[in-house]
Image (cartoon, rainbow, N blue to C red; front, side, top):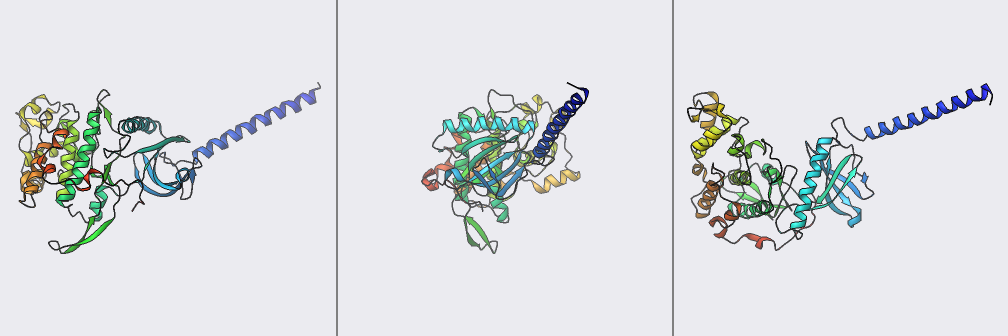
Length: 389
Protein backbone atom coordinates (compact mmCIF):
# COMPACT_ATOMS: atom_id res chain seq x y z
CA UNK A 1 0.00 0.00 0.00
CA UNK A 2 1.43 3.37 -1.07
CA UNK A 3 2.08 6.39 1.15
CA UNK A 4 -0.82 8.33 -0.41
CA UNK A 5 -3.26 5.49 0.25
CA UNK A 6 -2.06 5.18 3.87
CA UNK A 7 -2.58 8.92 4.44
CA UNK A 8 -6.03 8.73 2.91
CA UNK A 9 -6.96 5.73 5.11
CA UNK A 10 -5.60 7.44 8.25
CA UNK A 11 -7.58 10.63 7.44
CA UNK A 12 -10.76 8.57 6.97
CA UNK A 13 -10.16 6.84 10.32
CA UNK A 14 -9.78 10.22 12.09
CA UNK A 15 -12.93 11.54 10.41
CA UNK A 16 -14.83 8.48 11.65
CA UNK A 17 -13.60 9.03 15.25
CA UNK A 18 -14.54 12.72 15.11
CA UNK A 19 -18.00 11.85 13.80
CA UNK A 20 -18.54 9.31 16.60
CA UNK A 21 -17.36 11.80 19.22
CA UNK A 22 -19.63 14.45 17.72
CA UNK A 23 -22.63 12.11 17.85
CA UNK A 24 -21.80 11.13 21.45
CA UNK A 25 -21.51 14.80 22.42
CA UNK A 26 -24.82 15.66 20.74
CA UNK A 27 -26.58 12.75 22.46
CA UNK A 28 -25.20 13.83 25.85
CA UNK A 29 -26.37 17.37 25.16
CA UNK A 30 -29.75 15.97 24.19
CA UNK A 31 -29.94 14.17 27.57
CA UNK A 32 -28.87 17.34 29.40
CA UNK A 33 -31.55 19.31 27.59
CA UNK A 34 -34.19 17.06 29.18
CA UNK A 35 -33.46 18.48 32.64
CA UNK A 36 -33.29 21.86 34.33
CA UNK A 37 -30.10 22.88 36.16
CA UNK A 38 -31.45 21.56 39.48
CA UNK A 39 -32.48 18.19 38.06
CA UNK A 40 -36.19 18.58 37.26
CA UNK A 41 -37.44 16.87 34.10
CA UNK A 42 -38.44 19.38 31.43
CA UNK A 43 -41.89 18.52 30.07
CA UNK A 44 -45.02 20.09 28.66
CA UNK A 45 -48.68 19.22 28.51
CA UNK A 46 -49.28 16.50 25.93
CA UNK A 47 -45.91 14.79 26.38
CA UNK A 48 -46.20 10.99 26.64
CA UNK A 49 -43.85 8.95 28.84
CA UNK A 50 -43.21 5.25 28.22
CA UNK A 51 -45.74 5.34 25.33
CA UNK A 52 -48.38 5.31 28.04
CA UNK A 53 -48.59 8.29 30.41
CA UNK A 54 -49.83 11.51 28.81
CA UNK A 55 -49.03 14.57 30.91
CA UNK A 56 -52.03 16.86 31.48
CA UNK A 57 -50.97 19.29 34.20
CA UNK A 58 -48.59 19.90 37.12
CA UNK A 59 -50.17 19.12 40.49
CA UNK A 60 -47.32 20.11 42.81
CA UNK A 61 -43.60 20.57 43.29
CA UNK A 62 -41.19 19.75 46.12
CA UNK A 63 -37.49 19.36 46.82
CA UNK A 64 -37.76 15.76 45.49
CA UNK A 65 -39.19 16.72 42.08
CA UNK A 66 -42.69 17.26 40.72
CA UNK A 67 -46.09 15.53 40.69
CA UNK A 68 -48.08 15.68 37.46
CA UNK A 69 -51.55 14.58 36.44
CA UNK A 70 -51.52 12.07 33.59
CA UNK A 71 -53.85 9.97 31.50
CA UNK A 72 -52.84 6.31 31.61
CA UNK A 73 -53.57 5.02 28.10
CA UNK A 74 -52.90 1.44 29.21
CA UNK A 75 -55.76 1.71 31.72
CA UNK A 76 -58.43 3.09 29.43
CA UNK A 77 -57.23 6.70 29.68
CA UNK A 78 -57.98 6.98 33.39
CA UNK A 79 -56.36 9.69 35.47
CA UNK A 80 -53.31 8.98 37.64
CA UNK A 81 -50.76 11.03 39.56
CA UNK A 82 -47.14 10.66 38.45
CA UNK A 83 -44.31 11.60 40.82
CA UNK A 84 -41.20 12.50 38.80
CA UNK A 85 -38.06 12.43 40.96
CA UNK A 86 -35.14 14.76 40.19
CA UNK A 87 -32.29 13.31 38.12
CA UNK A 88 -29.87 13.49 41.06
CA UNK A 89 -28.28 10.58 42.95
CA UNK A 90 -29.51 11.46 46.45
CA UNK A 91 -33.12 11.81 45.28
CA UNK A 92 -32.94 8.60 43.24
CA UNK A 93 -31.72 6.72 46.30
CA UNK A 94 -34.48 8.23 48.46
CA UNK A 95 -37.07 7.28 45.82
CA UNK A 96 -35.90 3.65 45.90
CA UNK A 97 -36.43 3.61 49.67
CA UNK A 98 -39.91 5.11 49.23
CA UNK A 99 -40.78 2.45 46.62
CA UNK A 100 -39.69 -0.23 49.09
CA UNK A 101 -42.08 1.21 51.71
CA UNK A 102 -44.93 1.53 49.20
CA UNK A 103 -44.46 -2.07 48.06
CA UNK A 104 -44.59 -3.21 51.68
CA UNK A 105 -47.82 -1.24 52.20
CA UNK A 106 -49.39 -2.78 49.08
CA UNK A 107 -48.31 -6.25 50.20
CA UNK A 108 -49.77 -5.83 53.71
CA UNK A 109 -52.92 -3.96 52.64
CA UNK A 110 -53.88 -5.18 49.14
CA UNK A 111 -57.50 -4.02 49.53
CA UNK A 112 -56.46 -0.52 50.63
CA UNK A 113 -58.44 -0.60 53.88
CA UNK A 114 -55.95 1.50 55.83
CA UNK A 115 -56.15 4.83 54.00
CA UNK A 116 -52.60 4.95 52.61
CA UNK A 117 -52.12 6.10 49.02
CA UNK A 118 -51.76 3.24 46.52
CA UNK A 119 -48.70 2.94 44.31
CA UNK A 120 -49.71 1.61 40.89
CA UNK A 121 -46.35 1.30 39.12
CA UNK A 122 -42.83 2.73 38.92
CA UNK A 123 -40.21 3.04 36.18
CA UNK A 124 -36.98 4.85 35.27
CA UNK A 125 -37.20 7.60 32.66
CA UNK A 126 -33.79 8.96 31.53
CA UNK A 127 -32.47 8.99 35.10
CA UNK A 128 -35.73 10.10 36.69
CA UNK A 129 -37.41 7.57 38.97
CA UNK A 130 -41.14 7.88 38.27
CA UNK A 131 -43.85 6.54 40.58
CA UNK A 132 -47.54 6.35 39.63
CA UNK A 133 -50.35 6.64 42.17
CA UNK A 134 -54.11 6.75 42.31
CA UNK A 135 -55.19 10.30 41.50
CA UNK A 136 -56.33 12.17 44.59
CA UNK A 137 -57.49 15.72 45.16
CA UNK A 138 -56.62 18.69 47.40
CA UNK A 139 -54.63 18.26 50.59
CA UNK A 140 -56.39 19.01 53.85
CA UNK A 141 -54.10 22.06 54.16
CA UNK A 142 -54.88 23.40 50.68
CA UNK A 143 -58.62 23.03 51.33
CA UNK A 144 -58.23 24.85 54.67
CA UNK A 145 -56.29 27.63 52.93
CA UNK A 146 -58.86 27.97 50.13
CA UNK A 147 -61.52 28.22 52.85
CA UNK A 148 -59.77 31.24 54.44
CA UNK A 149 -58.53 28.96 57.25
CA UNK A 150 -62.01 28.48 58.67
CA UNK A 151 -61.87 25.36 60.90
CA UNK A 152 -63.35 22.03 59.90
CA UNK A 153 -66.57 21.07 61.75
CA UNK A 154 -66.05 18.71 64.70
CA UNK A 155 -67.87 15.78 63.04
CA UNK A 156 -65.61 16.07 59.98
CA UNK A 157 -62.52 16.25 62.19
CA UNK A 158 -63.67 13.04 63.88
CA UNK A 159 -63.92 11.14 60.60
CA UNK A 160 -60.61 12.48 59.24
CA UNK A 161 -58.85 11.84 62.57
CA UNK A 162 -60.07 8.24 62.70
CA UNK A 163 -58.71 7.53 59.21
CA UNK A 164 -55.37 9.22 59.97
CA UNK A 165 -54.97 7.29 63.23
CA UNK A 166 -55.89 4.04 61.48
CA UNK A 167 -53.41 4.67 58.64
CA UNK A 168 -50.50 5.51 60.94
CA UNK A 169 -51.39 2.72 63.40
CA UNK A 170 -51.17 0.35 60.41
CA UNK A 171 -47.67 1.69 59.67
CA UNK A 172 -46.61 1.26 63.30
CA UNK A 173 -47.94 -2.32 63.31
CA UNK A 174 -45.66 -2.93 60.33
CA UNK A 175 -42.62 -1.44 62.10
CA UNK A 176 -42.69 1.87 60.20
CA UNK A 177 -42.65 5.48 61.39
CA UNK A 178 -43.92 8.02 58.84
CA UNK A 179 -41.83 10.91 60.32
CA UNK A 180 -43.37 13.68 58.18
CA UNK A 181 -47.04 13.88 59.09
CA UNK A 182 -48.65 17.25 58.32
CA UNK A 183 -51.90 18.52 56.73
CA UNK A 184 -50.13 18.80 53.35
CA UNK A 185 -49.51 15.02 53.38
CA UNK A 186 -53.15 14.10 53.96
CA UNK A 187 -55.19 14.32 50.75
CA UNK A 188 -58.91 14.20 50.12
CA UNK A 189 -60.03 11.55 47.67
CA UNK A 190 -62.52 14.09 46.32
CA UNK A 191 -62.52 17.76 47.35
CA UNK A 192 -65.94 18.72 45.99
CA UNK A 193 -67.68 21.05 48.42
CA UNK A 194 -70.91 22.89 49.18
CA UNK A 195 -71.17 26.55 50.13
CA UNK A 196 -72.65 27.02 53.59
CA UNK A 197 -73.45 30.38 55.18
CA UNK A 198 -71.55 30.86 58.43
CA UNK A 199 -73.76 33.11 60.55
CA UNK A 200 -71.08 33.63 63.18
CA UNK A 201 -68.44 34.77 60.66
CA UNK A 202 -71.13 36.31 58.40
CA UNK A 203 -69.68 34.77 55.26
CA UNK A 204 -70.00 31.73 53.03
CA UNK A 205 -67.66 28.85 53.81
CA UNK A 206 -66.73 25.72 51.89
CA UNK A 207 -67.95 22.49 53.44
CA UNK A 208 -66.22 19.40 52.04
CA UNK A 209 -68.79 16.86 50.83
CA UNK A 210 -66.76 13.70 51.49
CA UNK A 211 -64.06 13.56 54.19
CA UNK A 212 -62.44 10.35 52.92
CA UNK A 213 -58.68 10.91 52.97
CA UNK A 214 -55.41 9.19 52.05
CA UNK A 215 -52.03 9.45 53.74
CA UNK A 216 -49.25 10.26 51.24
CA UNK A 217 -45.50 10.93 50.96
CA UNK A 218 -43.56 8.00 52.36
CA UNK A 219 -40.20 9.41 51.23
CA UNK A 220 -39.02 9.81 54.83
CA UNK A 221 -40.75 6.74 56.30
CA UNK A 222 -38.32 4.70 58.39
CA UNK A 223 -38.41 1.03 59.39
CA UNK A 224 -37.69 0.29 63.05
CA UNK A 225 -34.42 -1.50 62.18
CA UNK A 226 -33.10 1.28 59.91
CA UNK A 227 -30.87 4.21 60.83
CA UNK A 228 -32.88 6.96 62.54
CA UNK A 229 -31.80 10.44 61.42
CA UNK A 230 -31.43 12.92 64.27
CA UNK A 231 -33.62 15.55 62.59
CA UNK A 232 -37.02 14.56 61.18
CA UNK A 233 -40.52 16.04 60.76
CA UNK A 234 -41.55 19.45 59.46
CA UNK A 235 -40.89 22.04 62.19
CA UNK A 236 -44.45 22.79 63.33
CA UNK A 237 -45.22 19.09 63.84
CA UNK A 238 -41.91 18.10 65.45
CA UNK A 239 -42.07 16.25 68.78
CA UNK A 240 -40.05 17.44 71.83
CA UNK A 241 -37.89 14.29 71.91
CA UNK A 242 -36.58 15.23 68.44
CA UNK A 243 -35.76 18.82 69.43
CA UNK A 244 -33.99 17.54 72.56
CA UNK A 245 -32.20 14.77 70.61
CA UNK A 246 -33.42 12.00 72.90
CA UNK A 247 -34.05 9.50 70.10
CA UNK A 248 -37.43 8.83 68.53
CA UNK A 249 -39.81 6.08 67.45
CA UNK A 250 -43.54 5.66 66.71
CA UNK A 251 -44.69 8.19 69.38
CA UNK A 252 -43.27 11.09 67.34
CA UNK A 253 -45.99 10.40 64.74
CA UNK A 254 -48.63 10.59 67.48
CA UNK A 255 -47.39 14.05 68.48
CA UNK A 256 -47.61 15.19 64.84
CA UNK A 257 -51.19 13.94 64.59
CA UNK A 258 -52.09 15.91 67.73
CA UNK A 259 -50.74 19.09 66.10
CA UNK A 260 -52.63 18.31 62.88
CA UNK A 261 -55.98 17.77 64.62
CA UNK A 262 -55.55 21.02 66.54
CA UNK A 263 -54.96 22.82 63.22
CA UNK A 264 -58.13 21.33 61.75
CA UNK A 265 -60.04 22.46 64.86
CA UNK A 266 -58.62 25.99 65.26
CA UNK A 267 -57.71 26.87 61.66
CA UNK A 268 -54.13 27.80 62.57
CA UNK A 269 -50.85 26.11 63.50
CA UNK A 270 -50.35 25.34 67.20
CA UNK A 271 -46.57 25.95 67.10
CA UNK A 272 -45.86 28.83 64.71
CA UNK A 273 -42.09 29.14 65.11
CA UNK A 274 -38.77 28.42 63.41
CA UNK A 275 -36.51 28.28 66.46
CA UNK A 276 -35.90 25.34 68.82
CA UNK A 277 -35.79 27.25 72.10
CA UNK A 278 -38.85 29.31 71.14
CA UNK A 279 -40.59 26.06 70.20
CA UNK A 280 -39.90 24.66 73.67
CA UNK A 281 -41.12 27.91 75.26
CA UNK A 282 -44.36 27.58 73.32
CA UNK A 283 -44.75 24.01 74.54
CA UNK A 284 -44.30 25.15 78.13
CA UNK A 285 -46.90 27.92 77.68
CA UNK A 286 -49.41 25.41 76.30
CA UNK A 287 -48.61 22.22 78.23
CA UNK A 288 -46.53 23.21 81.25
CA UNK A 289 -42.83 22.62 82.05
CA UNK A 290 -40.70 20.10 80.17
CA UNK A 291 -40.20 17.05 82.45
CA UNK A 292 -36.93 16.95 84.40
CA UNK A 293 -36.00 13.52 83.05
CA UNK A 294 -36.08 14.86 79.48
CA UNK A 295 -34.05 17.93 80.42
CA UNK A 296 -31.41 15.92 82.29
CA UNK A 297 -30.89 13.38 79.50
CA UNK A 298 -31.07 15.85 76.60
CA UNK A 299 -28.02 16.47 74.45
CA UNK A 300 -29.22 20.09 74.11
CA UNK A 301 -28.23 21.44 77.51
CA UNK A 302 -27.65 24.87 75.92
CA UNK A 303 -31.42 25.41 76.01
CA UNK A 304 -31.53 25.09 79.81
CA UNK A 305 -30.13 26.72 82.93
CA UNK A 306 -30.28 25.07 86.36
CA UNK A 307 -32.84 22.54 85.19
CA UNK A 308 -35.23 25.05 83.62
CA UNK A 309 -35.70 26.41 80.10
CA UNK A 310 -33.37 29.38 79.65
CA UNK A 311 -36.05 31.77 78.42
CA UNK A 312 -36.59 35.48 78.91
CA UNK A 313 -40.32 36.27 78.86
CA UNK A 314 -39.58 40.01 78.69
CA UNK A 315 -37.64 39.74 75.42
CA UNK A 316 -39.24 40.35 72.04
CA UNK A 317 -39.45 36.58 71.47
CA UNK A 318 -40.81 36.11 74.99
CA UNK A 319 -43.58 38.65 74.41
CA UNK A 320 -44.41 36.96 71.10
CA UNK A 321 -44.79 33.55 72.77
CA UNK A 322 -46.86 35.03 75.59
CA UNK A 323 -49.20 36.68 73.07
CA UNK A 324 -49.48 33.64 70.80
CA UNK A 325 -49.73 30.77 73.27
CA UNK A 326 -52.08 29.86 76.10
CA UNK A 327 -52.96 26.64 77.95
CA UNK A 328 -54.41 24.06 75.58
CA UNK A 329 -57.93 24.00 77.03
CA UNK A 330 -58.19 27.78 76.48
CA UNK A 331 -58.53 27.05 72.75
CA UNK A 332 -61.88 25.26 73.16
CA UNK A 333 -64.49 26.73 70.80
CA UNK A 334 -67.40 25.09 72.62
CA UNK A 335 -68.08 23.31 75.90
CA UNK A 336 -69.98 20.53 74.12
CA UNK A 337 -69.07 16.99 75.14
CA UNK A 338 -67.41 16.11 71.83
CA UNK A 339 -65.20 19.21 72.00
CA UNK A 340 -63.98 18.23 75.47
CA UNK A 341 -63.43 14.65 74.26
CA UNK A 342 -61.28 15.90 71.39
CA UNK A 343 -59.15 18.02 73.74
CA UNK A 344 -58.77 15.11 76.13
CA UNK A 345 -57.41 13.11 73.19
CA UNK A 346 -55.13 16.01 72.16
CA UNK A 347 -53.72 16.20 75.69
CA UNK A 348 -52.83 12.48 75.51
CA UNK A 349 -51.28 12.87 72.04
CA UNK A 350 -49.24 15.90 73.13
CA UNK A 351 -47.76 14.41 76.28
CA UNK A 352 -44.07 15.27 76.53
CA UNK A 353 -42.85 11.81 77.47
CA UNK A 354 -42.92 9.47 74.44
CA UNK A 355 -43.25 6.46 76.76
CA UNK A 356 -46.52 7.72 78.26
CA UNK A 357 -47.94 9.35 75.11
CA UNK A 358 -51.07 7.53 73.95
CA UNK A 359 -50.54 4.84 71.30
CA UNK A 360 -52.66 4.97 68.16
CA UNK A 361 -54.23 1.59 68.88
CA UNK A 362 -55.47 3.09 72.18
CA UNK A 363 -56.42 6.37 70.50
CA UNK A 364 -58.75 4.51 68.14
CA UNK A 365 -60.70 3.34 71.21
CA UNK A 366 -60.90 6.84 72.68
CA UNK A 367 -64.35 8.26 73.65
CA UNK A 368 -63.94 10.95 70.95
CA UNK A 369 -64.34 8.20 68.35
CA UNK A 370 -66.74 5.99 70.26
CA UNK A 371 -69.12 8.81 71.15
CA UNK A 372 -70.65 8.92 67.68
CA UNK A 373 -70.68 6.62 64.68
CA UNK A 374 -67.84 7.31 62.25
CA UNK A 375 -69.41 8.58 59.05
CA UNK A 376 -69.14 6.42 55.89
CA UNK A 377 -68.88 3.26 58.03
CA UNK A 378 -65.15 3.53 57.45
CA UNK A 379 -65.41 2.73 53.81
CA UNK A 380 -68.77 2.21 52.39
CA UNK A 381 -67.68 4.03 49.27
CA UNK A 382 -64.41 3.60 47.52
CA UNK A 383 -63.20 6.12 44.95
CA UNK A 384 -60.51 5.15 42.51
CA UNK A 385 -59.76 8.29 40.47
CA UNK A 386 -60.93 11.86 40.54
CA UNK A 387 -60.16 14.94 38.57
CA UNK A 388 -57.77 17.20 40.48
CA UNK A 389 -59.53 20.36 41.55
